[in-house]
View: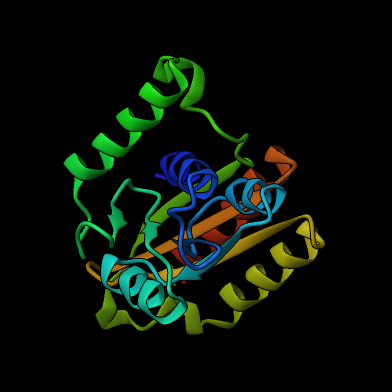
Length: 188
């Protein structure tokens, strides 16, 4: 989804169709997308996970392109919901415009290493994110990343899961930090 957002953003910006001077992604969007858009003098507005929140942020900021990492892309000039066929047609339009195959133009930016793990929990036994050991593991992870990465730890909105996402330049460090937090959540 992030690559599709980047591809459409560049094309629409070049053709004068992009509104809001950027696109809307989610808190899960890769930082590589943010860096890429900045190189084009465009911005990435971040919304909570969910099409509903992406659309709200699009309306608030006057954007006409938004989406999730999962590939749910909203092109509000055409539709107010994610539509795979509409997004596919826009990608095909870019391919036709550039006269290149997707294998050549589909990877628009280099994503930063990102690791996402989900931990199931029993809500009857408490909320793991309130646990002091979990909070300490998160603080330790943030300190280890030292501004060269980010963490996003959140409860799933649809099932009893804690999602632990880490992202940064050093993939081994990110993997260790995520594993430490997951272990703390599991122990809690």
